[in-house]
Image: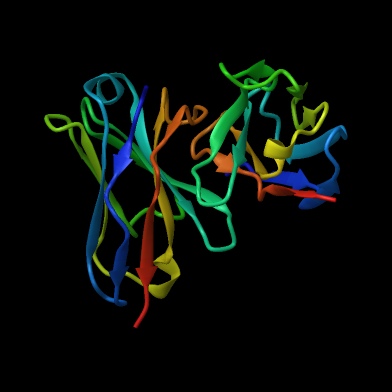
Length: 107
Length: 119
């Protein structure tokens, strides 16, 4: 299985801040990575797919980049509703695997 | 709006059997793979396996092979996740998901079924 390692595991930030979350794959996955947001008591929600494609309805302050093994999710200007846990997922091979999550907390 | 609707929360004892369900639309079940993702109390997400309801082609993640049974009934657009003998370590939230292929991104998530296993 491909291992996905996220960093940091948690981050504290303020409304208006720019936040970057990283994800590293244990082998090359080309651009086959997706990012999800999960709020307490809810299922994850797709934000970004194919490394940089924004899912319909997702605000443009979310963006993704990377290729091969190193990827980032950037939130350009944090809004109150963005405080949640974020997961990366490789969509290169079965079984799909997820990072361990990054919890974004209010400073 | 695409919906996957899962069965309700379950409380079971170790050694008991369980089958949980996920019902979707004919469109989803006719053109997508349906998978099950486990979220542990520590919040890790793990793909257990996927099934293509059209022909019941089923793939299991190596970690879950032999531990669970995934099935689907295309006539009712329902997928199932089954345990013959639950263990305490099966205590988790289980999500039904839809994907375009076994290795794709997850396009849709059910609301989750919480399985509690406790003596």
